[in-house]
Length: 248
Image 1 (cartoon, one colour):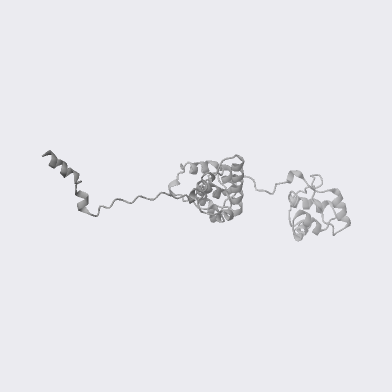
Image 2 (tube, rainbow, N blue to C red):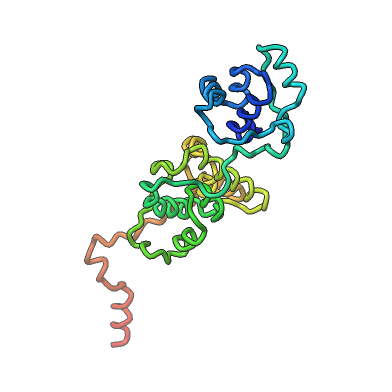
């Protein structure tokens, strides 16, 4: 829920014209400075702005106005409006300054390469780009793909580390819900940076092969024949000479 009413200055104009609330009460309710409210009352600020009735627009209870007029120390309470829940959250693609827009392809390539489980929509909201651009880089059909080097979007200042960790963990939960099996390398990509740095890098054998890392051959290796004596290597068996003598 927002902490100030819609059209704050117009609301302040209406309260000044239609109530006897103090400048401090109006300023606190509308989220303005007390001097700015005084300027509205003097006609120096918000000239020509039409008053916006907070009571008729379901933002302020008339009882609150009565209490405020009787007690100058009373703080007006904004009426709860279910329709305003979540309005302060950013919608659509993130705005990227002109100075950093040239870095977006490098960030997209980094996300596609190291986090292929992220959807195009998640990448677009994270770095503020469009799906056709992401698809072109993913399929390597981007016009400048040969010159693009993958760079972490956090290092480029396109997003915060906490935002990157949030969408990565969301992808991990989605993949776990689908029941797909992940390798150790994929699991490291789906966890946050802090968790990934704390994981062991030693390779692990599957559970079905547990115990084989201690397996050794028990048979003795046969020693190769010793042919260091050249005469014994080229000499024929003695029985052959006797057979030749018998034939003669």
